[in-house]
Length: 293
Ligand SMILES: C[S@@+](CC[C@H](N)C(=O)[O-])C[C@H]1O[C@@H](n2cnc3c(N)ncnc32)[C@H](O)[C@@H]1O
Image 1: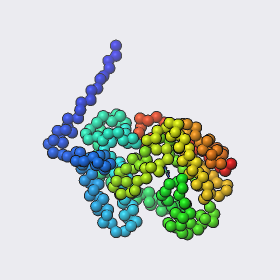
Image 2: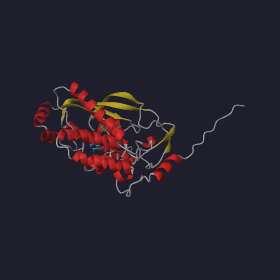
Image 3: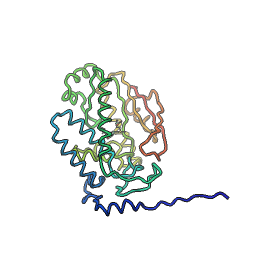
Image 4: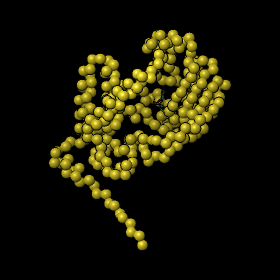
């Protein structure tokens, strides 16, 4: 007969002992917003300190870069288990058994290591981009894709680029649209909305999580994406190419194409193997190639 070893996990008493010995305050007093609920007290103190220093930076470009570093840092310092990084469940305040790594893990008590890592990484990426950049314009316009006026939004940001785009029009779109009832995008980035005071537009999300994936939700999703495509057409050349990435479980994209006066000319399968949560199984997404009908 073969023996079987049983390993029992004891709650981590060392953590509790240390917490008591040094009288550490782990939780914040209030939980009224994201930054209060999802960060341990020592982490929140460091975030506040860093943000105060950031406000003093005079050079606007340096300030933007540091803002990105801080945003990346605090995303990685939320008091969640490693297994629930993409779908926050409950804040963790002590050591826990980690399903992702198969060992005892602990929440972060300081932003320092991520701050150093993202500072180096961001500078490295900027240097790399500086080497690769060509004499072209890249611009980010924020707005509701169903009705944004691309020409006038562009005009405000870069009149030279706007002139070019109005003359030549846009050749194509590559986009990863939201999918129906899957992710609450505002909540995923709530830390940044909270800290930097960005205006939230929850009600403009297409296919929001709270509406689910029922018949009505799917219908309103289809309408939403059709509106986006029809709005986009105003700014596209006649022989445009549109590539949309979707895990189209409900087979909605043929209807969407039809309702937008488009045809699906090709479908590419893209396996998604490396997900944030390692316990989630791999799946494939389709990249739909659409053209005018
Ligand atoms: C799958 S994500 C892709 C994000 C981005 N393209 C990327 O690859 O990182 C879908 C995005 O669409 C955004 N979205 C949802 N409704 C929108 C709307 N009406 N107008 C513009 N963007 C919208 C969501 O907030 C989310 O950021």
